[in-house]
Image 1 (cartoon, rainbow, N blue to C red):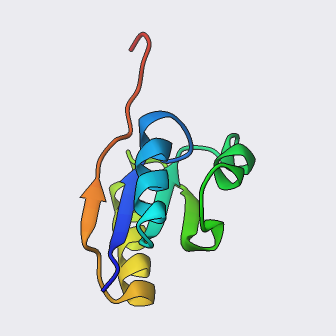
Image 2: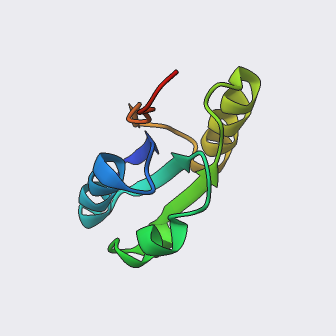
Length: 92
């Protein structure tokens, strides 16, 4: 059975590379990014874009994160892998 993978920071960089690898294997990827800015490039760069679902989500909002994960579970009936790749660079 193919895996259901959730990846934060999935619209570029390491997160997108991980998404590409899972999609190459035939898995379904639910990607999270803070904005939709890089979505067109991300979707164009992956195999099987029909299995790559991007969602804009600020991970600092705990209730929204819970709601997102519940929606993935309702749709896919499982979550096999969660990769917390999102990061922030710069001054705090």
